[in-house]
Amino acid sequence: QKEVEQNSGPLSVPEGAIASLNCTYSDRGSQSFFWYRQYSGKSPELIMFIYSNGDKEDGRFTAQLNKASQYVSLLIRDSQPSDSATYLCAVNMGYNNNDMRFGAGTRLTVKP
Amino acid sequence: DAGVTQSPTHLIKTRGQHVTLRCSPISGHKSVSWYQQVLGQGPQFIFQYYEKEERGRGNFPDRFSARQFPNYSSELNVNALLLGDSALYLCASQSPVTTGELFFGEGSRLTVL
Image (cartoon, rainbow over the protein chains, first blue to last red):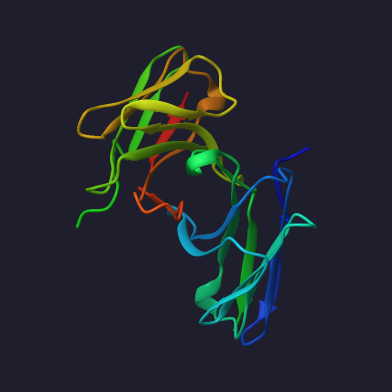
């Protein structure tokens, strides 16, 4: 079983729509969860992190965590063409933040 | 402040050769992690070092090794290169404030022929 799983996509949404990205993880003891954005040919950059069950909002982005279901998601409201990128879900599976595991990523395209 | 820096940015090697990749973390960061990213895949964890000690290791063969120096910079070494080692190698440092956020360098693109 893969440790962190994401829908590989590609996911295509029209400009202004809500993009929903999903991720499940295998280690029930995981405590910290991250969403990274990676533009083609670039390195990943952090969008959000979440530790507690529930929702966390930052501008157009909302991360949702459900530890009982081992599920984390990212919603992007009012999607813009500049949001077109690969979104990586990452889960820290070690103590002291020493074992960050990434999903394969979901490629998002926002069409004008 | 400078971000995470990696060198070289691109390199081409042949099968069986050895490669050394270098990384300097953000000033004040004591933790360095190495990841391998094959095209179309997410980054795969190779190693984490903290204060010169290995704190985590992913599922990679012994051909992969790393070390961290007193100034917290790090090297990743890969011996007996295989075609399948062709990938983007990412180095990331972590803030001492334990949010766990990784700050990535631009990567070293390795091509093995």
